[in-house]
Image (cartoon, rainbow, N blue to C red; front, side, top):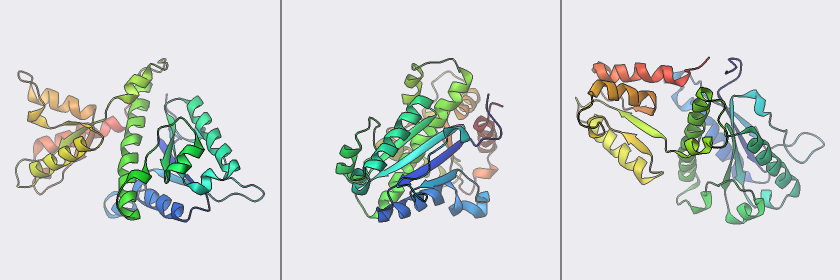
Length: 268
């Protein structure tokens, strides 16, 4: 049973105040997941993104995080040498890791290794996102981090929705959490760009995380009804709507969007 007064997902970004780039990275994440870039289209609404860096008076670490304030919670930890060399910060992050582990798969710490030495000092079991391995400028790495986190948040939310169906599941639910997120590429074939863009996105998805994708006629088994399979896949996928010139005029494209919207909040 969900609580309608609580947000579905809250994102926290934590970084040591000595890490100057931490504020820029955190702000880039906030702008993306708050959707300020799309405020003319979507009204600027989006996920709550909260910061944990500045310490309150009399302490050397930020305020604690209350996992009960949201249905699911993601804590992004930017681990740099300042973090690694501060024992109080290390204890703070270890406590967060233990707290989220006890809460189940609906709350996660996502370590981001700014440098390998920081990851070694952190010494937590969680798999890290390896900023230190990525090429490019800070801005390019920020974009890669946004993409990596968007995927991980989707995986966590999918598990949460599945858990609502089967709340009695135990740790065997990890198997479901580990399944690839399927992306439904909704596009129109009635202009020059829709299918071309869909193909390019599919190639990119498979070259990265190896995400599973659904590409209409290419992925519908022979002998099955097109419309039945299509709408079923929309309901179990993260849908990307490729809005080219003819998209809104195509009946099936409109139907796919209509089917996808109820899947966001299927339980009360």
